[in-house]
Amino acid sequence: MKPWLQLMFFPCVFLIWHAEAEFFTSIGQMTDLIYAEKDLVQSLQEYIRAEEKKLSQIKSWAEKMDVLTSKSASDPEGYLAHPVNAYKLVKRLNTDWLELENLVLQDTTNGFIANLTIQRQFFPTEEDETGAAKALMRLQDTYKLDPETLSRGNLPGTKYRSSLTVGDCFGMGKTAYNDGDYYHTVLWMEQALKQHDEGEDTTVSKVEILDYLSYAVFQFGDLHRAMELTRRLISLDSTHERAGSNLRYFEKLLEKEREEKEKENSTNKTVTTTEAVVQSGAYERPLDYLPERDIYEALCRGEGVKMTPRRQKRLFCRYHDGNRNPHLLIAPFKEEDEWDSPHIVRYYDVMSDEEIEKIKQLAKPRLARATVRDPKTGVLTVASYRVSKSSWLEEDDDPVVAKVNQRMQQITGLTVKTAELLQVANYGMGGQYEPHFDFSRRPFDSTLKSEGNRLATFLNYMSDVEAGGATVFPDFGAAIWPKKGTAVFWYNLFRSGEGDYRTRHAACPVLVGCKWVSNKWFHERGNEFLRPCGRTEVD
Image 1 (cartoon, rainbow, N blue to C red):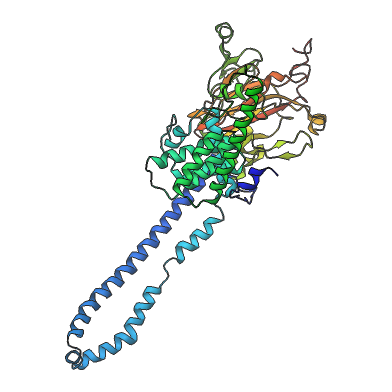
Image 2 (cartoon, rainbow, N blue to C red; image 1 turned 45 degrees about the horizontal axis):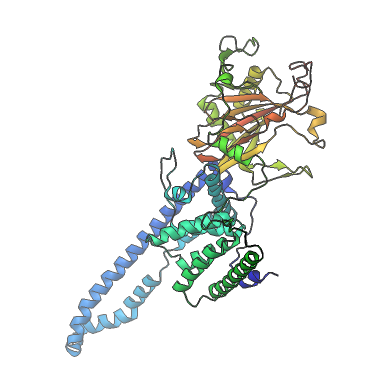
């Protein structure tokens, strides 16, 4: 074991995971928590009123007894000479004080505690709190927001502004630390320290913040700053054993580094001192598993969209009658080209507000964490790169579902008989679906034999989003922004049946707002003559 591993012991948080919770993955379901909290506040206010009433009675009794005992104590024998006074003294001590005791011991918390106990079983879990913290960090990275901006709540399109306390920032840093994410640990512990230094009232001590921060900085190889932070910690708490051990260890490492540098310079005097790889206080975000991360996030911010003037000239608006579909001849849909190749179109006024609300109403009780198929096993599982909840609606659920399905068939000219059920999705905090293909590239998918691959995607936007939430295509640099009541459509396969790899797309994290979508995946079977093969493999 490395020496520093023996020296530095930090608190570990062991989480109990509840798969059925995951409030953070759906803003739609999180609205229930608002009403639950309001109910608890009302219950708490009732408890306070009951306590105030009890205290008022006790105070009134105390004031009355203070007057009485002042009189009786001034002349006890004279006071008790009156037989009524003697009787009342005996009665008070035998009965009245017992009643007062019962009043003081009266438990007015029963109603509030009972309500709290019932509500607690529906509360978010540790998993939700961790997921919510990671969602904020995801937004921070994707939209290049510094901790100060998030902490002060300075976000575009927000109606109800809110800010993070020192304790909140410290909690964010601890979440990152427990996940081995020292990059975000540094950012959020620094923000917590900054707000603490500015005099914000908090129960979190600077010693606690510096303890985590110095260790995270050390993980980046920044010995000088780690020592500086540790010395500051010791100046606040000279009895902190771990900090003292760490400082001695840092000094040894620094001395060893200095000796090696001197030895290197003595053997080769022409060697010039190069700048340190890590500049004090500035650390780069580590690379992750997604190769197109930078392109994807830039598109989410509206940067790097490859909409050139030449391409723009090839995009048109028109009325679409579904190839002279009788249902659309009188009332065609407005169609707008979003991209030329691959061809992506947007349709306007596809769903009415009433239809949207009905579908949301049907879907909300059935929402469950959206899953992805494991590429190795083929088993459906949840994944951090898909943060949303979804449900599937059948035509028998309500006439509006059948009506919307029929409309999509009329617009696309494809059959819904072999299409998948209508999927409704609601995105949670920082809700996203990182770059993926809609078509299957796995030979073990059972639906490939019976229904064929996913030929096309019809995506309905059922809400406006104040900020973020775009649908982006990293391969060719397109970004499509949600607009309530509209829908976008594209083919996932060439006419040959081969997958069009350019259609790899993503749902960007929702920065501000609540994003609802529904989609229909059309399959190959039943559409052989509705979309016949082309002459080449890439037609």
